[in-house]
Amino acid sequence: MTKEEILERLSFSVVRGDKEMARQAAQEVIEQKIDPVEAIEKGLSRGMNVIGERFSKMEIFLRELLMAAQTFDAAMEALEPEIAAQKREVTMRGTIVMGTVKGDVHSIGKDIVVTMLRTGGFDVHDLGVDVSPLSFVEAAQKNKADIIALSSLMTTTMPGQGEVIEVLKEMGLRDQYCVIVGGGPVNQQWADQVGADGYGETASDAVSLARDLLAERKK
Ligand code: B12
Image 1 (spheres, helix red, strand yellow):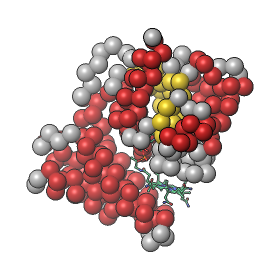
Image 2 (cartoon, helix red, strand yellow):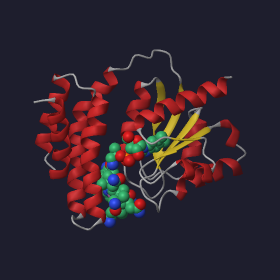
Image 3 (cartoon, protein in one colour):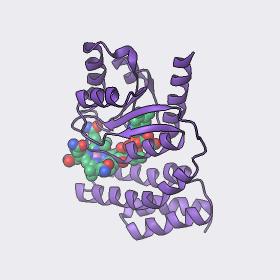
């Protein structure tokens, strides 16, 4: 199989909800030494976008959405160790607490960002999903974090990102942490509106963003 065919197969497996096909295609990625991040972005995520479109047009039901998510996860089980194995950084670049905001249980994108940040040399505390603003702040204090990273996949839960920043301000802690935001409906304009320190579109962006912010801080 060519690289293009493997990426296509990853995408198709998510659309079909076919876990076995996803596992096999992920195995091909590893055997052919294709970049696992590219496999996620140009394979699995492309399939997930198709599913998202179909769901919003009500062409498919929640059950199919869930099957697509489980298929994505099945391939990730094989790909994640490959990404982690790429870790070259020995020195810790900084500490990050990350989670998906209150009311939102979407975890796939957040998990990828966590993996990529760890690979990029950060100590990441994954707080999971449906995390309240106060829990983010408490975890940041407890772990002496440099950055709070907030994921949100729904327009209805995006305000939760702003709430974390509001809680930081109320507690007089805003200057102590950089806050970065991301997730499907989030963009730079939103980040500016809620007063975040940065926005990243992809997991790779999250790594460069975190590096740049900490380099700026250390100056
Ligand atoms: C899979 C999925 C689900 C799965 C999630 C499984 C899981 N464990 O995560 C399940 C089936 C559980 C689900 C449930 C629901 N979902 Co849903 N879901 C999706 C879907 C199809 C894909 C999301 C995904 O995983 N994408 C793939 C990952 C890799 O991409 P990503 O998350 O965007 O992450 C990347 C970037 O955004 C970025 N990133 C992410 N976070 C961060 C954070 C930072 C700091 C940075 C820098 C970057 C960054 O990096 C990631 C990797 O590159 C989307 C549609 C879509 N296209 O987004 C709908 C979607 C998000 N869901 C939607 C809805 C409505 C729901 C439900 C309400 C459905 C229902 N009726 O119950 C529930 C919500 C439950 C809840 N309270 O949260 C809507 C939201 C609409 C809105 N209001 O905005 C969407 C947009 C579908 C649609 N078009 O209607 N869903």
